[in-house]
Length: 65
Image 1 (cartoon, rainbow, N blue to C red):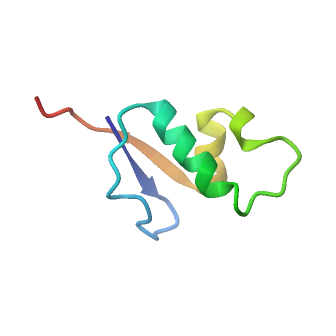
Image 2: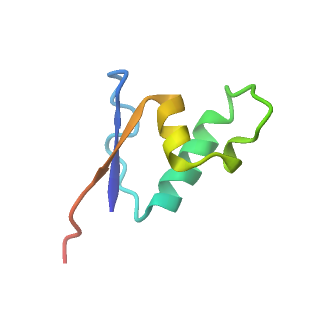
């Protein structure tokens, strides 16, 4: 499970818990598509590239079982 930390200090999305990295990537692609104007679609970017683009830090958290 994962959480995001906004490195710009907005605390946006910091209360979300994601099941896996794919879910994180899909969420950030959807979020950034509204303001992205580049020629390569965000869905083709790696997770690390999207994290850098939006100034996010990915934090792995323990699962509660």
